[in-house]
Amino acid sequence: MFLIIKSMLTPEEVARLVAISQEMKFVDGKLTNSIHPDKQNLQAPRDPGDALYAESVKIVTAAYMRNQQFREFAYPKQMAHPLMSRYDVGMKYGKHCDAAYLAIPPNVVMRTDLSSTVFLSDPASYDGGELVIHLGSQSVPIKLNPGDTVVYPSTTIHEVAPVTKGTRLVSITFIESMLRDVGQRTQLYELNMVAADEKERMSWAGRVRLEAAIQNIMRMWAES
Image: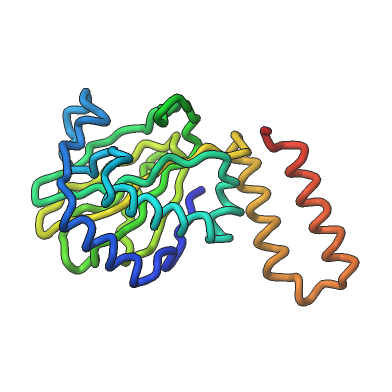
């Protein structure tokens, strides 16, 4: 199961990130996956001392953390610093599965349960560049409006299709969930959506019992 969040970033935040990207000195994307023969992109330098990088991390992280839909889908325990990534004409990232564990400086290692992409470029400004998620025999291409976000299991095979015109700018990150099991996350997300949709039609006693059930299931399944 994957989630699309519309307008997670405000237009002002998108505009600021695009402006940052125009000032930033991007580096070769192979720095984070040197062995993949079809990783051809550029990415922000992971330098905490770089003011532009630090500002981009702060903007995107804050957007995730304030979004209730994201929190109730991902149940985030840890999240990697969001990283801006750029694809110019001819660039792509071939089929791959994200690494199970990710080192976060200075000395933290997190499990990657979920991957996420925030789209920053107007989809009409570039051709190609779809995020393609492969689900069994089906391939799902995703290309969203600026500020929109997709969250999907890191276990899936996915790729970025070649860009044939323009520039694709995104921000990517990885999340370790309090709920390792994707089935458990899905069931709790569905219960939260039912609670949100039906609460005005439920009696107060019914709402209390449903919320208690959600919280108690979370206590049973969540990792500390």
